[in-house]
Image (cartoon, rainbow over all chains, first blue to last red; front, top):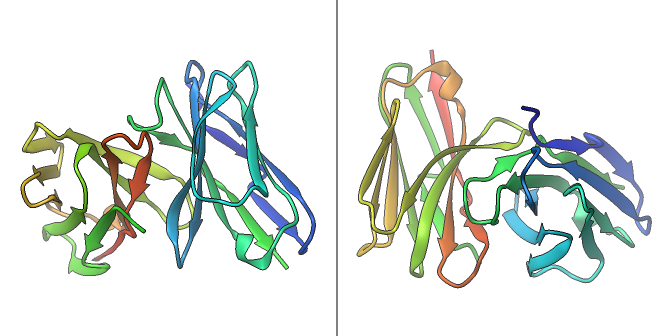
Length: 113
Length: 111
């Protein structure tokens, strides 16, 4: 069974640009969660999607958004990038909820210059 | 603010020794999980312990949970070089419907 796939693996953007990250969950998993990881703040919850609906949201500005498609694949978008958005963005999938055992992808390393 | 706080922040031991990491949290939880992360990669789930459980084992891993002290510990026995990684606890706070991760313990196993 294929694991969680995140693309791209690395991304370099400049301030003010926008970026879209993609996540393909494990087949059959309907819950997809996104986390931001930085050395200073650690792992911060962004949002969780289930059946194309955002079920939970973390404490991030509206520049961070996401969506989930009918095949459970998910994307997250960050608009008007700031230097502080540089981070490892991790996607995790699970069968039903974002609080059971999570399966993580390898992440997208975003650098904002 | 983080729900879980790991202690110590960093731990360096010799191969073959046991490694113990601790996690403290602030509010009532449904479950507590431990994850491992190799440098710059995704997290790997190690073990989940529910609030009504006190101890769980998985291979060389032993996790304890003390809800009265709001703390958990992860013991790795007979450590190997491949255990070098960062270890995170994550709590499912009651009513929150999301996992909150601690800052992690960076474990180094010296050959």
